[in-house]
Length: 335
Image (tube, rainbow, N blue to C red; front, side):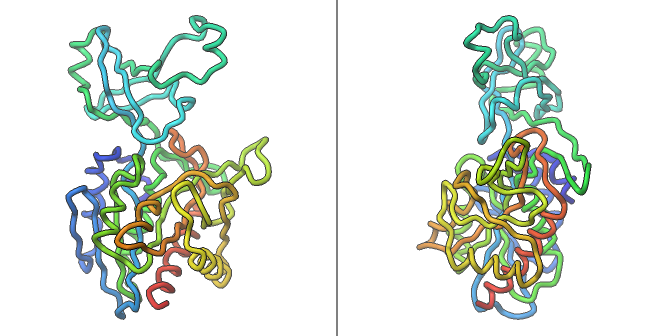
């Protein structure tokens, strides 16, 4: 399921392919609505009525590129959709909505000034080369407003590692789908949201509609457990389980839920860690402020090279995140 989800293309505001996949894989005993923004709001009856309403959230969109201009000689200028580090773009292959493949390029190194060589290339200095010789030829394959996506296969390697584009947040989508396909002890609400990468826009609308007592956000989060990175700057590490943060750039998480997540992890012998750097953000930023305020916690899979063509995660961390999310939802339903 995760491989299939990662290979789908679904930029912010263009989540159709993932939404269709989710709808086709919902169990027969789940009911759903799709709101005006494209969020999928799913309700599943459990064996018992829940004391409190708990909603789990995962976003369907991914970072991508948006075509903004076609030059006279057939190159495509673009903007990023979501936060993409320009350093990961040069020389990368991309796929257009039409299916055409291109390569991101810019000035050759011998054409750069000394100052330019010492700087990260600006996105606006790059272009997509699709092998067209003119604007007219390029327009056969691309239109302004079209998206371009990283060409990146799903690969398993090493000691349980996986590599793909869009692990953020197809891991969350996969976890929610697997939860919905299993019998649940309590009623459950699952929200598959849109436009997280451009400002957590869908989640606010979804949270306002479902109005849960508690929200659990399933995400990927940046891991920097790399050579020459030490101490708190490593943020979190692959192989050490789910990540439960106390604060990021969008949310100060509910302290009781933060502590409860670690208590549940310890009780169930699940590896669990926190983020040692206040950075990033996710749908919780919009959810915790919606509908008069919602107690919110984020449970994330640590991910190297996030928002790049080759994101890397570990299967064991995905599995421990899924188990912790299930146990946490059960505890909150009956809190």
